[in-house]
Length: 163
Length: 311
Image (cartoon, rainbow over all chains, first blue to last red; front, side):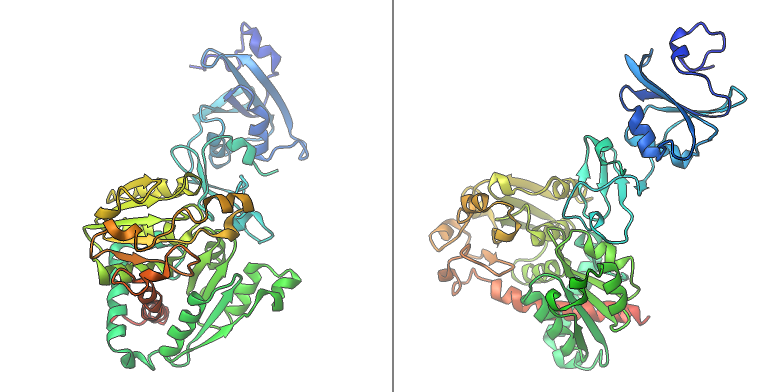
């Protein structure tokens, strides 16, 4: 059973026509409205590697009033890669597509920690200086916590995404 | 005790704490017995911030165990001024010494440094973060004066930036304690610390107050801290709160007769010198306890590092 609003091959769902179907790759669905660009940022996808990326923002959804969809052609994202999305898009579903068919579908899961993804907002933290250190955050039930200085961030986690 | 490094008091269990304090008591009772125990051992001191008590008591402790120290000296005369990273500096000094003591202005500095070295590394203060060796000597002093269980303690002053406070409160949550935190609103405990105290398995009791008056009579220990000028981004904010949380003989009129007054020192004017000669004052004893406690800690960590069994 497909989700309420993932690619319908019968074309009845005209909302979906706003975002083209992909042949092989990954569809990240049920992203909270307005977070699509953060999804790409947190995955480190900026188009420089030549990936073909389509984005739908604020499209109508049964589950949310509005949702975003991100489709990455030619790349199957691993569970480890997508779990980091749980920080900003906890309800996201991941669809792995081959030859236009969804062959695998799963939810993002909260990882115990994320490395090299977020920057600590504490200017007095050792991880924000010139040291050869990769940022590391423990993932809490609510928010994240810097493994170096202990700072807890609950809101606006997307603003910490390393660029 | 089995730890490679001492970074935060959060890593210490009740058993770990008691092991160090018991060893400190043994050493304090007979220092001659350990005078050559670590002959030939070198302790590397890396102090990126000023220190008198912590640095000198580590130096004293190592020498009283028969060892010696190598000191990076002032930051101004070191390679740090050439832009060397902390990660590189600790990897170099690790080759000179058997254990390292680090004080650094950045939070998390000791955690990061410990990832780059194999010798035991002791955190002697990382910005507004942790200061676990101070905590152990605080606990030793509390145990000697009031006992660590069924304890009611008031911790007063700069609770936001005071690293000794954070480290002490974590460690006390291993014991049956009621902790009262007294500070102006702008210097209350950081939410990270409150979060951790609430997570503590023994469910230590925590209450926050803006005045000492109401809880003073119930206290066994009053731990006073300096409102630290250097932690304030703004001089006006410092002036506003400085001096609000001082104690003198008049303040203590309602205190229990056996109240113990502690302070990590240096003090500015938080404790009136008129209290120094009363039975309340334990802050100089507390500073002196830094030596046996750091001797015990070095002894345990160095013995571990050499693969010796705990005695």
